[in-house]
Image (cartoon, rainbow, N blue to C red; front, side, top):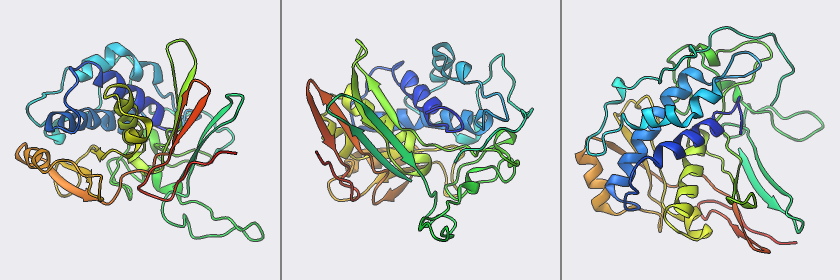
Length: 305
């Protein structure tokens, strides 16, 4: 997903940074710590460089450049927690975007994934943002308007309802699209065949959830159903008011081992328990079969015509 969503850039950064390390045991303290350290740096980049490409020059090429991601990965200490207050956006030849482009036509969280018998596929994410959006129903049409204005930066460094900050690149302007985290995603086999179709709602947890499903499937060899329904976790930068916190699934059947969580606390993390992170709806294409994997965290289901 391209800007004004941060999802595609962030997902590419996370995957490239993750592959710089020897694969840790899934669900271990080392696994959660490594991904949390990666997420801190990706969210720091997002806060400075993300915005509407109709108004600012988003340095997509530079942010997803493997050499840049390797430099960011080299900052990670796999045995010690980095204080988020010491982490800043990365630097490269392109300066942080501040100059706005001329105004263009504007654009506008539910996710569904579809594939038909011909192999044509759709991964679609659409959002109201918060519950019931703005609370305004379009007269005679029966649908709600969203409250995506919250995804703008009200002012540099100010948190939105999800605790995410931004800078001038994502400031409010007439006709401008706000920065989101939506990440409808296709994954292809090396020979170019479509393999996975996936996405999720979840605010800033969207691309971290999609990342975990992809790595669960590719790096940890899970079935697509296992990859979707495995416990998930989330970290973002800057830290929340209660410290350097990691949100962790706590629903029945979706819990990390207690020893893993205790070890994370010993590293200095604050754990925030969640009844469910994301709601991934995924499809795997296996030969001529399409395998649907709905997320048991919510009401999604797999259907076949």
